[in-house]
Picture 1 (tube, rainbow, N blue to C red):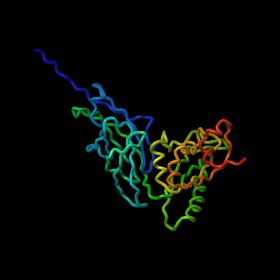
Picture 2: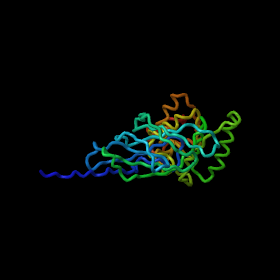
Picture 3: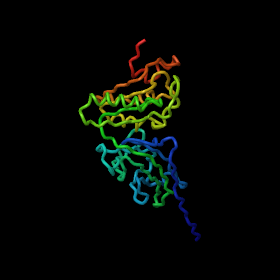
Length: 273
């Protein structure tokens, strides 16, 4: 009798370039990957993930290819905070019941990911790093004034906003100003500080606030390049939860008349001719 040895091939995994978090996020961030097994994807047993620890991992189901990590609210100004992240799977934001420890607030974090097969053979690990800011408030100030003068504009509006808040109320500041634009033309391209897709991370991030104060240099004149048209379609859950939003921006009709009915920013804001 001849016995043929069976050789197991290790799985592979790579970070998806279409599902990367921006270089700075708050407490909700999504990232995707592609895991494969030469012996058949049914041979995959799990996806291992870890924050800032390349030796100890937490297991996710093998069919998870997009994970959203949600962090708890933290105290403003506190140093050296390390928290656990809840993990939600897919575009549908399905709870996995899994938490991953070790996320450092107001610091650069590295996510390590690897795939494992039924024989416990693991892939070469991959990693991705970005800066994580803490969510400290139920009030969000969005700096979308994409001109070089945005520091002065933000200082004015932050002072105005704080004058209406109880003394000492923290305000989270989300800066999506870059890249800047010059002259009177619309902003192009859209800020790289936004995630590549609005769901699920951006939708869940905005839902976490009660009040949003958005200051922009341009919002309604075009869809391509402006930030608010990208964000507006996912604000319905925010408003359904009782959220209140103020937008301070020049209001211009779209350059392309066909965008009047399709630009979500023009549908969000009252336009009077």
